[in-house]
Amino acid sequence: MHSKTDPFATRKLFGRKIGRRLGVKRQELFDTLFPRIDIKEILKTKEAPVHPNDLFEKPHKEIHIEIGFGDGDMLRQAHVQNRDIGYIGCEPFMNGVCNLLTAIKENDLSNIRLWQDDALVLLTQLEENSVDRLYIMNPDPWPKKRHYKRRVVRPETLDLFAKILKKDALLIMTTDVDDLAEWMVTQASNHPNFDWQANCQADWQTPPKGWTQTKYEKKGIAAGRVQTYLIFKRQ
Ligand SMILES: C[S@@+](CC[C@H](N)C(=O)[O-])C[C@H]1O[C@@H](n2cnc3c(N)ncnc32)[C@H](O)[C@@H]1O
Image (cartoon, helix red, strand yellow):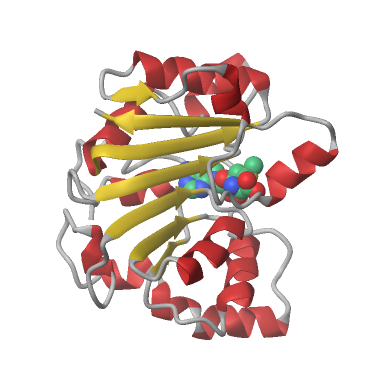
């Protein structure tokens, strides 16, 4: 699946993959529903690099990927509202995946696919210039300086995002941690392929139109923190 020179191939995933044991019903849902939309299963029959449209039964007008979807608050609504967009959700934490599966189990799942692992590993398998939008909402802040290299947004991951995103595609990142907001703005603004779309403070303090608040966003707002919405365009 990976080339030996691929920097993400042997990457250690930081954070939880398994939490509380799943109850019988949730385990059953995971065992029956997840394999139908599990990208790992689909990739077994494909050669990398893969065009993300090939992960679905039919091609979609656009491909949107979310890294670290948590409970999948955005995906559960968006895939119903925008049937012509193919959504790829990445989340290693099994309980989060189950929460999303529970929410979408009655839906038409032809435009949603899931990767229950490190998103960066999946992104290395995708064709260049093939993705229309990348969402990273409230990534883990890793506040200690010696842990900055664990942050999902950093120079080498931005290289990877730039590679798979199409020209004019959007990279949307949010956080309510000031230090992380500053870090993400700095890293992405310093990258030659990303252009920050904000002109004034209101632009990064106002959610984009039709925005769905995530669990972490709601938690932060309830605690009095201010969410920052950072929108960059792939040049
Ligand atoms: C702080 S939570 C935010 C969840 C959700 N986006 C929200 O706003 O409610 C960060 C999530 O990113 C996931 N995560 C961390 N590293 C990841 C990686 N390399 N690939 C995919 N997901 C990752 C974690 O498992 C966790 O669920």
